[in-house]
Image (cartoon, rainbow, N blue to C red; front, side, top):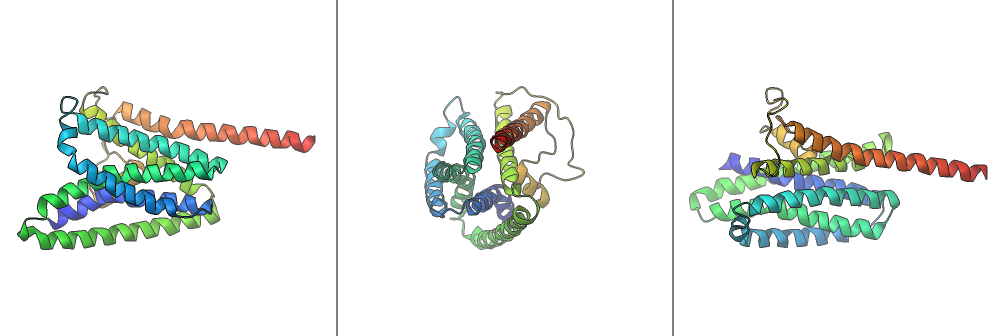
Amino acid sequence: MLINTVILFLRDGLPIFLMLVLLLLINNQLALGRQWLYGGIAVGVAGSILLVSQVDAVASTLEGTGLEWLYSLGYIFIYLGILLALYAQYTRHTRLWSALTLLLLLAVLTLHSSNFLVYITGYWSQSNTLKPQLIGIVLGLGILLSISILVFFALEFSDRQLYAFTSSWLTLLFGAGQLLQASKLLLQIDMLPGQSPLWDSNHLLDESSGMGHFLTALFGYDASPSLIQVSIYLAAVILPISYLLLAEANKRKVNQKEELL
C-alpha cells in the first residue's frame, strides 16, 4: 500500500507539479499576477471530482472506450493549449496567456488528479490501509515538492544565466509528452495502427523506475516506442520550433530594413 501510494504520486502527481512549475516560471517572466494559478487549481479540483463522479457513465460510452477517448482528447488539448500559450508568451499577449494557463491547469488537474481520488476513495474505508496510505501521501507529497523546488530553481537559473527560453522549450517538450500519452491510449483502442517497438531501452532506464517516472512526466519518455509514436513526437516538437525560428528570422529582416530606412 505504501509503495503503491508513492508510485501513484510519481506517475500522476508529478505531471501536475511540473506543469505548475513551468507555467509559474513563464508567468514570472511576463511579470503577471498569480490569480490564474489559484483559479486553475480550484476549477481543476472541481473537474476531477466531476470526472470521478461520472467515471462509470463515461467508461460505458462509445462501446466501452469512453475513458480512453476522454483522456486522449484531454492530452491533445493540453498540447495544443501549450502551443497557444507559448505563442501568447512570444507575442506577450497577456490576456490570452492567463486564460490558456487556467484552462491548462483545469485539464492537467482533471486528468491526473482523478486517479488520486479513485485510489483514495477506494481504500480510505479500509481501516487496515489507512496508516500506510497516510504515510504514502506524506512521502509522495514530500518527494513531489522536493523535485518541483529543484526543477524551479534550476530552470530559473538557466533562464537568467544560460538561455532565456529554457523553460519555454521544456514546456513544449512537456506538451509533446502529453501528446505521446494520447497516442498510447489511441493505440489501445485501435485508432492508430499497432506496430512493433523501434527499440527497448528498459535495460538502460526502466520506465517504471523513479527516474523513469520523472522523465516520462517531464517530456514523455517511452522505453519502447513504435515508429508512429516517434513520428508524432518529433513532429510535435520540430514543427513549432521551425515556425518560431522562421518568425525570428523574418523579424530580424524587418528590423534590418527599418534600420536601413
